[in-house]
Image 1 (cartoon, rainbow, N blue to C red):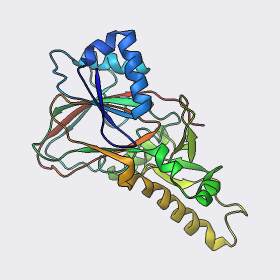
Image 2: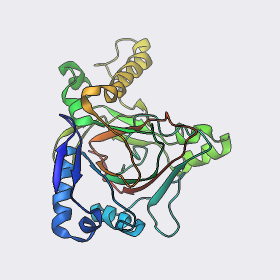
Image 3: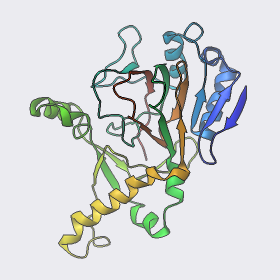
Length: 283
């Protein structure tokens, strides 16, 4: 196994490893997980489906934990937990935003294993960002201000936004907003993680005497702070950008990263398959 770091803060490309072997070997999987905790996102090339099938894909992801379904995208009928992200004729608005998967859930995803089936000759890259580094680089006064803040994240205002009112409201009832700490602790490394993304709608406990002098401070003050925190994912120094080829695979730690699928390729097709892993309740 060979490991090449891609940037200072995030990302490594791993070669001379068959992911199918890691799916069924305790030793190889332990090495893989250690690398993931260190580099946050790992990339693999040339994982041919004859050697790394859909069943192997699901088996590898399940080594990390149970797999989750998706209320909008659904999963493969023969491989529960494998979400087919096939973009072709329609422009889809749900990719090109900074997000951590399932932040709208009480227990967001632990991570994911994503394989490229088909991609355009140029375009359709994905960018990941290190949200531990994003937190560590914040000014001290901001760190103090957000230390005890909690925020609400919602699927209704994102995936539900393009639905008609009845379907959107039904989606919101089925998946009510989730409350999370603005700064979460990574459950395995103990690192602090900036934990707001595009699913985050507002703070839940901002309106206190420490933060609000007059009533007019309430909404503008909170929204400006949230926008500032969300913008930290856009800092290039915290990012790694990956150019897909068919049979490339990415594995990422969703607890310490966010990602952004660049939508510069439409109407060319882009077909990806993702196995998302159930996570823990952030604290």
